[in-house]
Image (tube, rainbow over all chains, first blue to last red):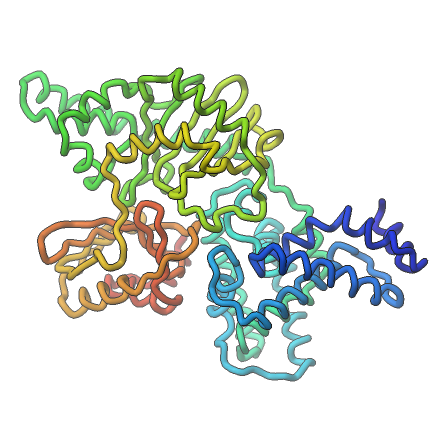
Length: 186
Length: 338
């Protein structure tokens, strides 16, 4: 079924919207949750919560890109679950490693709560990503949005894990400098 | 800004980038088939150098002298053991000469030949210059591999989570299939079976359980044991009296006691972690009892070292940077120049 068809089911308040969403995006959502949580039960619950949230968000919303819409929800829910669990570094979860890497960009000191500043920062990151070659942009998004492990990214990109690791590191440094030049004190 | 807040903020990046990243499947130029061609070319270069080495050593062998050195040359002709560490391992037992005899003299692995690739820490494996040799009992290997691969599963969600990889794998190209599987410490096999050089077909089945992998794992384990590969743990690093770091073909040394002490203390902080796909430098340490150990040190900012597939995290980026600074290396400069 097309994304438009699925969204229409939500708008019609037809419960098969959930079934169709699960058929088309169940694995996709689970992957994002699992990358963050590394726990099957928690990931399953987060995926179900995602469907629930989507059910109550559509309508009024009408997502243009359904995968990104669902992905954003499951990512957010999974991250909150991770925080709630006060998860320790469990083997396999990518998040501790990813947060370590992000330590090169953000100081980990309390930052501004100002939503406007955060919004401007995201806009700057979007501008930065737009300038990157496509393959480098994909690597960055796979690592820091989908929380993919390096091996999975390498497989997707058809290159070696070493290349991916080194490339992502270079992108991090460039992004750090890019944001600093634009006055974002992270 | 808190690291978690930064990660959370990223959820609002442009949806088009998110969709693009989901749909991106890699370029043809990055196809693993091309990677194999590249690796084969690299092996060819090694073989040329090794050929010269062999010529010199064969003379010694004919004279009845330096058999062990001749053995080294035989190892090198196949690309394996191009470092001192590996050569030492090959040289320690005379029986090993017998086992090494069946090693093929060609530099590229022939079709329909099961080849075992060994790459202990300190070897040049991660530069793509792999070595290999063909076990004598090919039929036994082929039969065991076919059975194991028929039980391969899709473990998309758990690639590398708990399975630290041993530095040994096999490669077998046959009937349009390229089997390339690595043994993990838990006895499972991780890898791929390319069909006609493409990533279709069996590609997604990347895991063979310890039970299903047992016959092949047993064969690989025998070879692993033969080479005497023994991963070191942080507590085995001991007191360091000399250190030698080889990074991208250049060697840096360290003999300052204070710096060596810091180096040892930092490395000993290592805690077992998940395998990492970092680029590696080789760090050779001489201990106070005169023995040496080699380990692989990530040089991309990850504070990780590994010994024969066992990975240890010793701190954060700053810790990694400080280690390289001991050797007078500016990590930022290295990354930029790369």
